[in-house]
Length: 162
Image 1 (tube, helix red, strand yellow):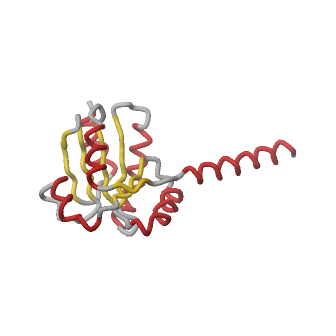
Image 2: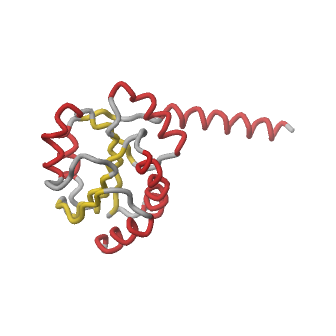
């Protein structure tokens, strides 16, 4: 019985520590652009989403499955860029915990300048989300406007990661 209580106590402590570790970094467009350019040696998947976007939330489990599949591949990285408001940061953190998001999450706190930075990512992007942009060697290789299925996501990665 002591062992069960001890294991339960350790499990609760680990869960609390894990929950406390969840953070989200608010950044501006220029910082995100710099991060993308720094990831030159990796195939980079950048997904723009929001906690209030139903198609975004629907596709996230597929993204997490794929992220977990490639997590140990040093050539692969996934960044989830939340377009939620900075005032909703705590809601985003709660969402990350509840949905067990394993990819890095960044809060793009630059809503007022959307019309400036959206065309810099993709000239044909109308601002709707979800949007996923794939980069290889720091260069954009594919732009997906709208929800992606797990198969579409995996096929795009497989085709470009090799």
